[in-house]
Amino acid sequence: RKRQRQRETETETDRQTHRGGWRRRRRRRRRRRRRRRRRRRRRRRRRRRRRRRRIFEGKKEKANVRDCERKKRKRQRG
Image (tube, rainbow, N blue to C red; front, side, top):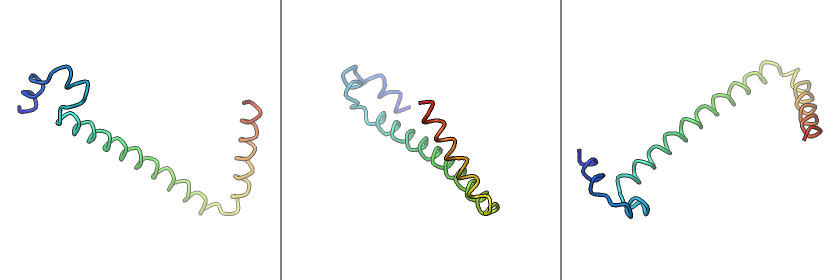
């Protein structure tokens, strides 16, 4: 309820200069939450890759060669 009252009393200049304190806080919180979610997803993917490498240790070199070939093809296209 308090936040709604502040919105009504805020002027256009306040909005442009981000003087509204509650607005700043809200934006910061949202950004932090989004970043955390992205980081968690990335970490999960990395862990899966590591597990695969441990299981197929003899096939590491083959996989590496494949990756190098893919990179070469990408360079030729670009």
